[in-house]
Amino acid sequence: MKNIFGLTLEELQESLKPFGVPSYRARQVAEWMYQKGARSFDDMTNLPKNLRATLPETLAIGRPREKDRLDSADGRTTKFLLEFDDGTAVETVLMRQPYGNSICVSTQAGCNMGCAFCASTLHGMARNLSAGEIFSQAIIIEEMLHREGQGKVDTVVIMGSGEPLMNYDNVLAFIRLLHAPYALGMGYRNITLSTSGIVPNMYRLAEEGLPISLSVSLHAPNDALRSRLMPINRKYPLADVVKAARHYAETTKRRVTYEYILIDQLNDGEEQAQELVSLLRGQLASVNLIPINPVVERHLLRPSAARIKWFEQYLLDHHIQVTVRREMGTDIQAACGQLRNKHLKD
Image 1: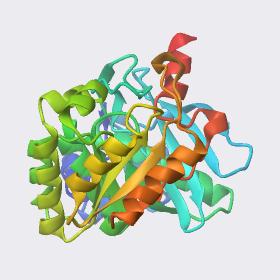
Image 2: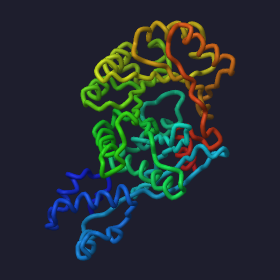
Image 3: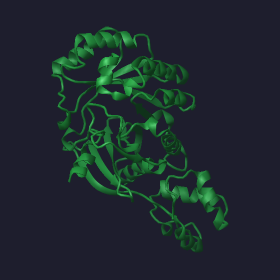
Image 4: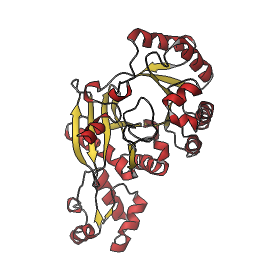
């Protein structure tokens, strides 16, 4: 059986060729799968009856099942654990923002980047996700929002479990599918991709001609500290990562966001603030400060509110555009990897 969920229109046309049907049938199938929530060919009432009976003999519409769901007490955040046919489970999160519904999707089951502050890396990486498996996360939430009368998915951030640029081809296929008019038709400017700094693929992404936003997980302003927090820095040092990010901004004319997790007494002092200002001065960039969401196994603590405010003000005073990420879903383990890890332990 061939799973056709996640195929592009052109790929669907190829899959339907053996059935001798007109090429326009592919668009009908795509719209049923991606826009009307069809889970079987029987649902596709504008297909000939004999075709609806024949297609399931060799083709399948494979979608994950909802293994777990957690809703925050304030009703703003919902976290899903989705399980695919092979038993692999991944997390995706819905965040109801003032500007619309935003979702955070995973691109790998687990992660092998080994970042010292992240729950996703605790069990390593199981495998890459296919374009369809990434896209199914968006579709499941889109359908839930529609059922519950809460609108639609307005923005997508690719910063769940996994390193997107280590699953480059599938992630790019997902982005293009997300944009396709027969799927969700989302504007590229509503999509943000986050990377820990896979330098060759940052340059590759800049040449794709897609005006998506890029976020770079920085988390430290010097190589020694960044290598301690993020082992990938030993392969792609800080200067190379920042150079690639600058190239992305210059090529796409899109502001790069540098993500900076604030960890008490580790990277939140005046010395680190000064280094960060020196590193980013003059760039088309902003900093997103993220007070750490503590992971029990990591033994890293959140700075005090006063210390977070001081760090923010120091950057502002030195003309660095900065925001502090608003916490959402703390009560439902919304940090990457925490819900999946709970199930792996059970």
